[in-house]
Image (cartoon, rainbow, N blue to C red; front, side):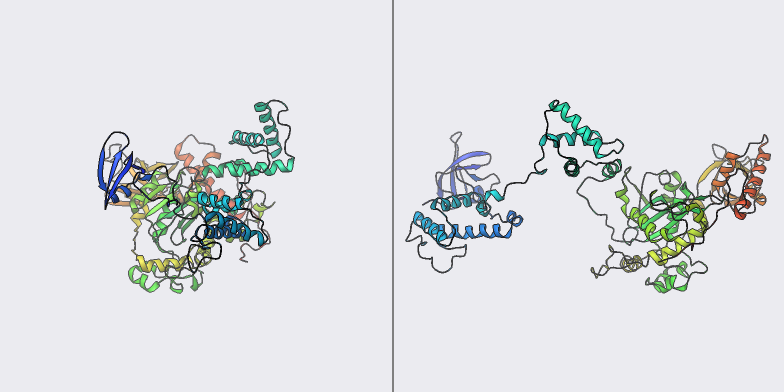
Length: 640
């Protein structure tokens, strides 16, 4: 009788400690090993030998430790049931019982104590044949052998387990040519599949000679084959697809998780799909810079600026996340924090600034994720983050997935907010209307007010599928509810920002305080506060630290020994309306320079006032770029 596999007996050859030995004897818990190479004899504990990592019994089939049932799940139910039935038949032939649980007595003809193995095999063949499934004794014997080698998987009909070709009956040479053609076109401009078909024909002719590959799939079949090859090989068919694949991270993909508010905040900028009326009367798309908290999916701050966001905008964005947003005049009372689910009374007792605040979270970021844009890697933004104690984590270039939450937030703003605003441009050139510029009727500040109101009532109070209550995982909640729940766990620490802190976040430069005052960007700033400090800087370069706001260029701040001092523009009285540094730069480009510096600055101020007046009244200009922006009869903002 054949002994069970895996049992060690005297005389067996075994592998132990990187050598081959012969088991020469057993004495209770001890064994004697004789090395095949050399005459060394060792007496060891049997448990020590059996527990060695490289222990194996040589010249003996390895035992199957666990039955293989997983591959059966991919088969049809009928095929799977037939294999399991054959397993029961094999067990009955070998042990007399139709299963591993040996209960009851063996059936007639299958008792190992009465019938031999050959008789049991013949009985099983006769039984299956009588049941309508003709089976020979050789088939029963073959199934027993396959079961010992492969387990239950060996009992499956081999014709049903053959691997299906990945690309069907396609010629492997054609598939290889498609792979080469797709690889060679990576980085090139997108073309049609007909161009790719010509390239594949040239590759086949180059590799196998003219006319060697005669069978070329028809056009429809070829197109399906190309898409299947591109999907399997990870090759894109278009330039846009190539860029998307190049920006994808290397698998395995891991979701970005944050457990508390401010643990991870993502920031980015994009053009908003809405035309606004700029200061010079032109209709342009503004740029939206936004910060999204990953833990609560809250939009902590959003700033709209003319195209060309500056570093100060990103610094302002950081400051806005740390302070409560006040209620605007005309906002309904239900937008206040007191009327929301946020624990208002508790927060007011900690931070008095919450009094009269809107229902928007106040979050102190610990880490800010940014891209490689000049705005976010500028000295002004990094200095602001360092001043506020915030860590900055830059993303690799062209990796939108690394800040996917804010990227997805831009898409949501386009569908939930922008498309309902007059002057909507659509999310692509194909979706753009023919007279979008004429529909624009909102100024940048008006659109900023609309966006701030929508964030409070439209975004923060909208249920988010990815937000689940910490104690009720099946409950979908809003960003405000998530912030309220997590604040009760992690707590809230107010971060007071003073006027001096606000000035510290603004862009800075080094300037000389001369007899005329401070001069930069063709503007002169002067005031009584500068008296006593002209030409008296103790710095090595003889200059003073000056901070300025590009969106309020009519004044600046100078760090004097007594602290910050605000200094006004000397020609501020000539300009009747607010303006930004972008308009001033535009005038400098289109205005002929005067010989005298002071005269040129005064001339720029008068031209600026003239441009702002024409842009406000809608009168036609004379080359400065101002024009009348007409509004259509449609409603400027409508929520469906």
